[in-house]
Length: 212
Ligand code: MG
Figure 1 (spheres, rainbow, N blue to C red):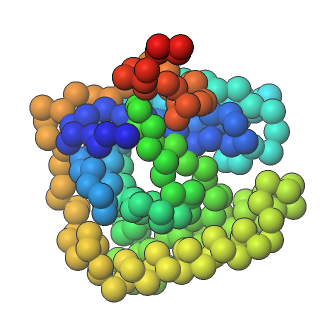
Figure 2 (cartoon, rainbow, N blue to C red):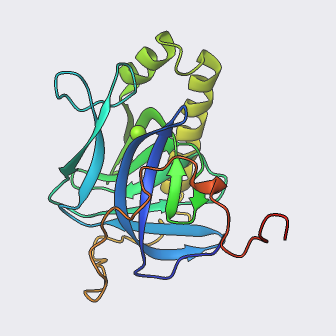
Figure 3 (tube, helix red, strand yellow):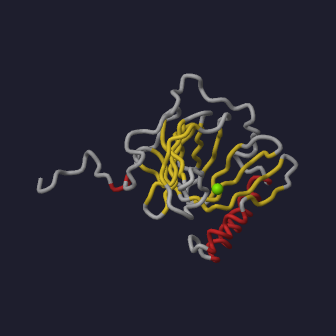
């Protein structure tokens, strides 16, 4: 599947057991074989999972519908690597980095798909760090959404991410605080087809016609 150009709008989706659980439009900053950088601008309209009382869900622990809602007053820059089960978000003070544990991103014709692993890590500017949403992961394991072995693996992934960041491995050798999107880039919106699950199975346009 093709790579995306800097400035190109895409959709970053969270899937859960064959359903779209969340979708946010993003702008591609950098799409290279060894590093993907995305930017979610402030106040973009996202699809968020909403429970029976209108509450936003963090994990699919009850029936949900998707609702379009405007998100966040700050833009979020994020980094991901092929096969790596986490993404790293440039965060706001007092935290420097936010590690989002997730399945490695899978490329689709309109963006990237993943499944969130509930647990996150916060890393402060002084290098101290802590887990975030441990109780959410515990609840997900109790509900059978993840196994205890999965949870152990997620913790190991988190510790590996922390080591990389604290060792200032690129791109963490740079501060990124002053990074700004190119003003000529269009504001991304949810593209047509964002709610169709099987994007990877959509036949390519150049596929030979049946019986052809
Ligand atoms: Mg998370």
